[in-house]
Length: 622
Image (tube, rainbow, N blue to C red):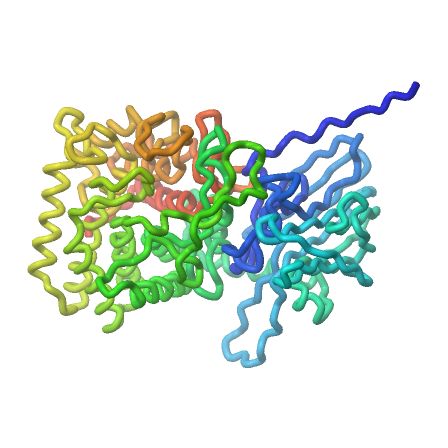
């Protein structure tokens, strides 16, 4: 009697077992199994068309992998040097196959070239090459429209398959150099099985149907031009420090998270990846937070990317120009400057746990006073290293500063976006001080009109308030809220924004307290682990950006060896291609949305500070 042998399902890959590709319009994550299992389209904050990363059965994916169920396959993944072109290598005893994934980007045109550039389709290109031996590969393309809520039909034609949503929204197309068929088990998915021998290749283009119908194009030519674009962009970096590889990868990641059309930088390309190991805290981070402005502008200018900084500053200036009449700003925006959608559950992508991923973000309606400090720090830095502010721009800035002068004493939800009410928070108070301080510096340096007396009085009042009410004498540390004993890692920003000297006794006491209570090896937790400060379920991991802030604060305090050790230990938490998640569990598991812009921004800042200390470069307090 024959017994059917059951095949155990493949184990689930960790969330960070992926590389990212993109074209500054959208991004895609490519797993170590050769599957694009997360992609929003046509824009990074558009509905997902692939979300198998969140829900493998219903989320959808575009996979190309060896059709060798009984053969062991070794897989390696890397970026081509100084590019965002991702290379996945499948290796067996019979052959070695390479999968190249990228999104075409337009090459910079020579000065004086008036010939209009041919428009590039918004699409993913996948090139499969056999470099040794032979291998049979299997392709499956199964998009799921509108966060897996929409139905579609599949239409075959020679050399292509199209996916048409029932609701008449954006149609998608897959062009192929190998024959495609309808998947026998899923009439909404395309399928192909093909063999490649030494030297042979196959090419695929997946994206907007209208653009991919218009013409055929050579995948290899697009690959060459895309490599050239990224390597030319990377060559513009002025960073020559000892951490070039990780700094460059961080810069390339930030570039992918930026909008070519608008200049905004999103916090992460994903939504719904849990920040806690129980599957809770599944937020949507595909929006631009104003507070990232200071870090973004600082990092971009430090690396020599003045064009990107200028583009981002134009985006910020538009938000300031169109803010409320009282000068107040939203916490976050879509890449085109609108309010993010209301927060709802993506129930079709629930993975069987009680926690469905969320789309939209309810924090959009919060009050977060710290965003104004980020905005003014960005404006000040760009004026210092970029271009002078315009008259209209200064008028908008003045209105926003006056708003902070009137409201700085009020409680808010803060940088950690507490969902259980407002409270007076150290970090928010600190960044209100930054708001007024940077405005005063800018007014004086540019001889700009301003109510200097009122601003000086406010800046001094905030300074005294922080020392009088947020300093805990018993703990010898600055604390999260007045009259509390709660530590908060956002206090690490105090010396970084030059509120307090990096060797001031009060600051060293705070630094020591954070090290004692919020540190687990290199990981720094946002506040006391297990605390119910935020009113949310689940215990989160160490916050990666806080760890890099901690490394920088140690270096600034003269504890260079300790800061360097924290920094280099944190580098080990990068994934196999140098990308960082938002958080890390004490077990080493990546948590939260991935990759996270704030983490990479903090890495760049810490690397610069460590280089200065290790090279014994003295930077005056200016």
